[in-house]
Structure formats: structure tokens, C-alpha cells
Image (tube, rainbow over all chains, first blue to last red; front, side, top):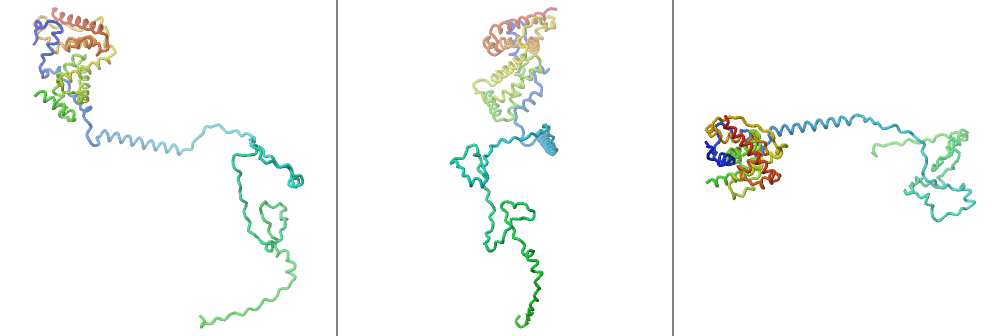
Length: 201
Length: 181
């Protein structure tokens, strides 16, 4: 209960009125905060309880479902054929841009007849960056002169033999067929059948 | 005994004990809520300020040196929290030309003396514009100087003085009107 004559000024009225308030809240509750204030403070200040709460479990489950569905959609999309929208490629004649290698001036016979001076250094235009591929030719088995039959350059089809291929010797049976038919056959020699004795076994 | 209890509360809060946090809140929530009711426009805004203020108290408890009273340290935090809330309002320092916030309730001087209690004065302050209310609270009730008010509210000293002058004029009109039958 405050009286107006106790206050010297307006400021004094407010200051003394608020200083004289009791510790406890008023009975009508005008100066008492609601309980939700402490609940919010408690939720903010106090650390969360150990263990998995229902909210955390729900959050983790939702995250896992999202990841699984996302992976399923991603995989199912990648399985479908990809439709490209790139324009059709127009084929154009290819112009050779490789440097032309200087061909030999003449055939080997001509070269042998008229020797051409060979420069000591190769022209740079012919030199390529990559090292020339050296393919070793297949090594043929060595055949002595006695074993080597007469090789005919003529092929049944009349075509030229492939480079590196060896000529097949002629079939001697076919060549000597007339002589063989004219010669009578000699009787076969009688070979005695060997007798096996049980004692030797 | 009081100082020891406060030290125990501080140690318990620093250790994160919920019982000490609740005890500190129960001890200081009512007086701090009265302070914030003077700065706020209504009960709900004062509760928001109180919530943010106590969160700052628990968070910054390590900064309390124990040199002064714990209640004074908490009160400074509450006032700063209230000022932070008020500074966010767009029309914090607006000038009010027409202001008719109060209706006649008191017919006699005895009637005024019997009813002009803390609750009535608080509700009277809440009807003031926020700038008037804040400067009057800081200067007339909490004892800050105009220099300190200007620094805290980021305004000039002249603005602080003019806000205080207008707040007093409005309060006088309210209280004078209360005697007009």
C-alpha cells in the first residue's frame, strides 16, 4: 500500500513502489511466469539423456529409408538405356594429313642399275614421333638341301604365293602314278608267326 | 548464509546439476520477471525475455566472479536481454504524436493511493511506446545515466533525454487524469 504524498516525484513513485515489493509472487499471479518458461529453459540448457530417444530413432529411421529409396531410384534409372540427344554424325571424306613418305624413285632393278646417292641424315618430314614397329618375321625351321624338295613356283590357282610362305613340295605319288601302275606287284613275304611258350612266361 | 547459498547454486549450475538450475530459477524468476514486465509490452513478451535471459545466465555462469551479489549479476543480464529484444523491434524509438492509452479509473485521491500498486504501474508502463518505456525504466528506476543509456541503445544523449521527457509527460497525464472525476 503506497500513498501519493510519500513520493517526491514521478520517478520516485515508480522506484519506491517496485523496491517495496515482497519476495513472493502476488496472489493473483500477475508477476509469476508460466511453467512453460522453465520447460523451454530446461530443454535448452540441460544435456540430452543418454541413449536413443524416440525422436532420434525416428530421425535415423527416416534418414535410412530416404537413403534406401534414393539408391533404388538411382540404380533403376541407371539400368534404363540412355537416350542420347546428340545430333547425327555426318560422315565426311577423310583427308589424309599424314606426311607422305618419299617413295623409292624406281624399281629395285632400276635402283641396282643406277645407284642413287643416299643422304646421311633422314629428312625430318619423314621422321615420326613413334618408334617404328619392328615385327620379327616367323622363323622357319631349318631344312637341309637333301630334305628340301624341288619347289615349284606354280600354284594350282595361278596366284602369286603370299610373302613369307613356303612352297609345298609336289605329290610324288601322283607324279609316278603311271609307273607304279605298270609295275606288277611283288608277292608279300611270308612271315612266320612266333610261337609263344608258357614256360618262358 | 545468503552468499553461501548463492555460491552453492553457482557451483551446482557450473556442474550442470538440474536440481541447482531449478533452485536458482525458482529463487530469481519472480523478481527478474517483475523487471522484465516493466520493459515488455505484455506478459508474453516478458516471458520470452525471461526464457532467453536465464539461458544466458546458465550459459555464462562461468563468468560470474563472485565479487558482487548473484542477484545483481543476473539482473544485469536480464536488462541486457530485454534491450536486445527491444532493439530488434522496428518501431523501437518512434515518436508518438497521439497517445491516449489510459482510461479513468480513480475517482478520488484515496482511490488512487489504494490502487496505484506495482501491478498498476507496470501496466501503465506497458502502455507507453517502447522507446519512452525503455528510457524511463533505465533512467528513473534502474538508475542509469543518459550517457550509459545512449551507449546501450546506440542513440545520442539528446535522444535519450527527449525520450525521457516525453515519457514523463505522458505518465503525468495518465496519473493526473486518474483524479478527474
